[in-house]
Image 1 (tube, helix red, strand yellow):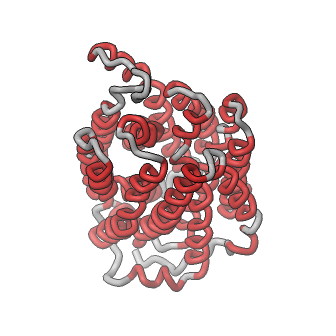
Image 2 (tube, rainbow, N blue to C red):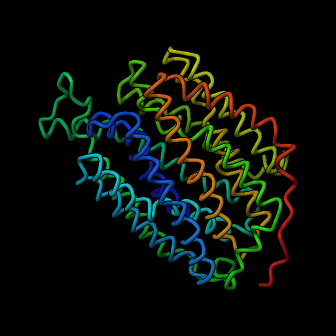
Image 3 (cartoon, rainbow, N blue to C red):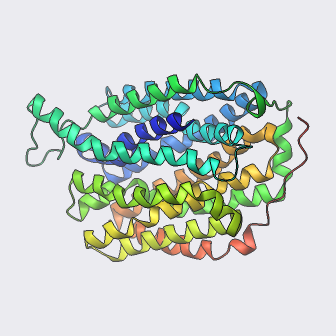
Length: 396
């Protein structure tokens, strides 16, 4: 599972930090259009995430579904290489989202099943390999891109994109996730990973108060935090940074993320899932507030260290809370519903509103609004999130 995470997030490390820059500079989209393209990912995820989760839980073939999602994601990445205008990028991003939006929730569900009896450190140590893959590729990609551009004789011209050959990121991301698919095919096919759910079983989750209240909290958390993250490359460029600056911004994010995630089990045992959630959202709020208040790239660079705390606290804390409250046979469905509400519903509204604020008020506006909102939300956790209580005893 370590290699699966490494290549899965390695592909994301080639794609995610630079896609909005590609859309803005290479494809010529304005900030509102960039927000619309990014909104397609969570929009498709509204349907794809719970659908793939149900297929995995009903069939019990969670490893095979994970491999299929990785293969589909690889095809989606490569298809974007051929998309050159706003409409084609919308459709290409939609194809990618059909698979990629469910890839990480599926990876989380499979990892939790595989590491179920391996001790409290096992999940965090395995997931840390994904961050290592992301860090490795986000550092390696810019020099590879520059070498590729020199071979092709591509140079930046005034009024044109700063990186005219940036489209090779789609090929690189596709290759990484294709390797992920091949590795996932070799994952275990027996034991807790194959537990099956019954028809209509997922409905009982909607009657489980801790699960439903977590969904509401995560919806608000992603609304405040997701949009500014998507626009970060354009934000850095607006403050005079280059593509290399965008790449280097990820280093403090990921260097702290690796040990924080590796020690996730110890942290969970000490402060609980609710403590993780509060820490993650407050850290994210402080990060964006500093970005919104400062025009100095040095301060913006330093504060990115809070990203790793947000990932461990919110992006992994929420799935761990879900795994504590849902039956094992609904593990994939629970993770899919979490992603649907957070990444999809929260992401759609956040991407569109952040794009509008960026375009109409200024580049700092999404960061000020998101930072203040996340700080207030983080302080309400004792009121919003109850202690984790499992919905029912599994019949395995």
